[in-house]
Every structure is written in structure tokens, then in C-alpha cells.
Length: 574
Image (tube, rainbow, N blue to C red; front, side, top):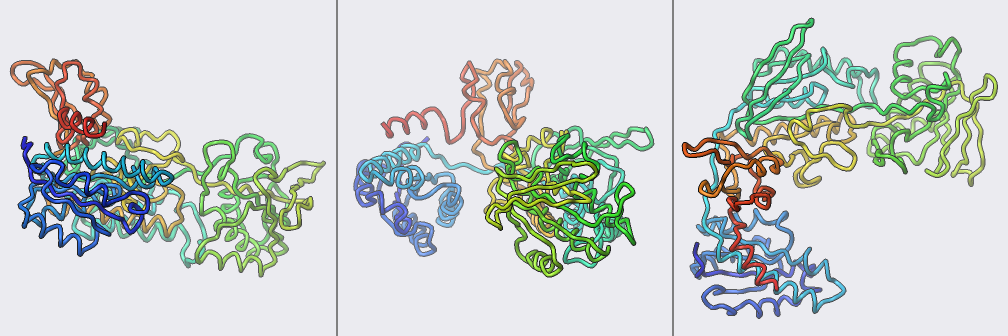
């Protein structure tokens, strides 16, 4: 552990995001020459991440013979990798780089107190310098990768992902728990902006899949166990055919999750659902118009007036489903337009909270208006009511578009526009330890920068298991996830960070507390020939540190977060 190092420090203006609230020159002066044996160079720069500054950093590292670099700038989530790559280009080990976040933690957090923000920034940079004393050169862990991907879920997203991977000469195990492929799309008839029905799309994809030599399709199959880590994940699957159970084990390098969604089911009595025969859901209505001709009938009566109540089970002010299901508005308008074209005398009344037919879907809304559909709008605190008066079913609302005038519609049929919800009773997320967002769909690492990756290395997500999507969006995410899975395995060898936990075998007594605390199953129980101890699986460990505080004999340490490092940083901060 080298405590006498030659460290270079850069303080970024971030174009004003930092320098408008933090006196960056004062920060530079506070750390420059404060310890001549440590900080041999300190500079300010307008944009540390710019190409010009990166080139200058490479030159500085070589010219000053630096063995440690600190950049004080924005969040490490944005540019940690950028500056690690800079140190590598200068022939310096990338793990000797230390990042100080003085934008989110100083300038933005204390924009109303420039003196305090500057003082805090100085302490944050000094803490980074203290940490840099202990930043040793480390080597990444190398893992041989199995060039096989398990795609879980054979809906439209899973099928497209499987085909994309197979075309890249990657073996694919396509796993579907139902006895057929296609998911929800297979249930659909005509689609907006497509000449094919949902079933025709699935039939075409299925034909391609069964012909492809790189795809093994397994229906009536579920994953019930997984072990290992990215590059070498052992999964066990259970296939049940005609009452016969068969267990199979595969080793895959990556897992692509495309398990889809469920339709929201209205509660008993919600808008009259279950108690009023004339009230049905959107999926039920679409099935009606796809399978009838001549006259549109329901319970033996011809349908003329149809009321559509939007956002049932979505955008809830109370309850879990506060999100917009995105596809419902378009799907409903398409169904309404189709009904009007297919059956004579139909009048459509749309009760909405504000339409969200985004992009090209606005064309469909315009077609609906030209066809004479009637739109009414309500606020969340003034939802429509559905009542029965004799044989009549009435829908009442205070219409925002007519200055809250109460409007009453006698409906032959009330269609509840139900949205998408996460899969019910799904154990697959728990099995793979996938985190969920506030909406209970699987969560990506970063919505914009890493939109199909999860915190579990080697596991990607695609389609509506990630959140409400239409077919186009599901296919796009599937192709993105397939590309990411392929990029993980294509080189045949993976590199993982060495920033993991370590076990001191002399101190460890195997109490099991660390194993229970680890959220990633990275701790193994082994016999080292002398006694039973814990061992870290480096390829799984995230270096989160949850095991360290529960270890009574203090046998666990974290590389790059050792006790001496943390204590020296605390001393610098106070």
C-alpha cells in the first residue's frame, strides 16, 4: 500500500454548474501543495470530460510521472469510466483513479450558500486525496463466457430477441411457461399501423424460430433454480407435458427476461364491473369485434351506443398503479374505429382524462374525430359514474370540455379501458433477484444510459415486463437487450471489477451472518482443509459492503474501501 504517491488533481467548472456556486480556484489553492509529497499538480478546467482536456490529462500523467489521478466534477455515474479510460491511455492502472463528486454533493446541494459549498468541496477533494493514498493498482478478474443466452418468455419481445441473437451465431434457449408462444399479442386481431393481425405476426415469428438451428424452444417450461454468475449461469428448468415432469439443466452466459404483463382486472363493482352485465373490459371488447360480423351483439342485444371509460387501473390517485399504461388510448380508439367501420349505426362516446396518443398514433385520433366519435373529459376527482335505471345503463360525467356541464349517456355497452400491470404471482424476478420500481415492473439500471440492463450482471430485460409498451416499443427494447447480451458474450472472455469483498481465513469462523446479508448470493461456505469458512465468488460480488458490518470477528474487508481508507477519508472530511 503506497502512501507516498504523486497525485494530480483536476477541478472542473462543469461550464458553470459547479463554478457558479463553488470557487474552484479556491479549491485548487486549498489542495495544491498542501502536501508536496502527495499532490504534485492541481489544475482547474472548464470541462474535464472534453476531448481536449482528456488529451491534456494523458500528457500531464506522463510528464509528471503521476501514479494517482483525481477529477473533482460531476457524478461518477456519468464519467467514472471516462476518466478510468484516460488513465489507461496514459499507461496508468485505471483503479488508481479516484473521483470526487462536487457537483451533486456541493454546488447543486448548496446553491444558496456559495461559501459553504466551496468549503464542502474542499473537504470532498481532500477526502479523495486521502483515499488516493491507498488506491493500489488492481487487475480485473477474467471469466470464460458460455456463448448461450436463455430468453425467458416467448411473447413478441422474447421471440424477436431470440431471432436477433440466433442470427449473431449465438445459441438461444427460448423458455415459455404456457403451451403456446406469442403471449398477449397472439390474442389480438387487427392492429394499428399494421396489415397483419397479432396472430399473423406471431405465426410468422414462430415459423422463423422453429426453422432456426440456433434456437431451442421449450414450452410448458419454467425456470426454478439458477446458480453462478455472468458468463456461466446454471439454470434448471421444469417441463410438464401431459402430466409428465422433466427436469433439464443448462449453462448459459446471459439471461434475457421478457416475461410480459397482465391486464388489469377491475374490482367487483368498479364502474359496475361484475354487477352490471353491460360493463366489460377492453380486451373482452376487442375479442367481440374480432369474432363477430353483421351486427354487434352482447347478451342477445344489438349494440349501438358504446361508452369507453379510460384509465381504469392506470393513473390512479389511490393505489399502486399511478403510472400511465401508454398503449390503452391508442388501442381503444383503434377498437372504436374498427367497430364503426365493421358494424353499422355505432356511436362511440370516449370518457377520457386527457388522451395520450403520442407520435404517429395521433393519426388514429384524427381518424376517429373525422368519423364522428364524441370525446368528453374528466378530472381524477370527477370520474364518471355508471348506474342502472330499469333496463337502462347510464354513464354520467361533468365534462371539462363543456365547462363542467353534466352530461348523461345511455349506453348499450360500457367498455372499461384497462391498462397493463406486472405479472401476478411471478417468482422469476425473485429467483434472479431482479429489483422492481415503484410500479412493480422490473427496473433497469438507468432509464437513458443503460435502459435494458439490470443490477444483476448478465441479466437484461425487454418488453412489457419492464413497463407498459406497445409492440413497436417492445420489439425495439428486445433488439437492444439482445445486442447487449451478445456484447457481453461475444469476446468469449469477460472482465469483472476487482472491487469486491475479501475474507481473512484466519479470522473467519463461519457464523453464516455474511451469507444471510448478501443480496447477490456471492458468499459460499467452504472447507479450506482446516475449518469451515466463507469464500467470496468474485464474479458475483458487487462490493456493496453489506457483509462487512455483520461480521463479528471483522474478517471481511472491501478492496478500495478498507478500514484505513475510510478512516483517512473521515479525517479529511472533519
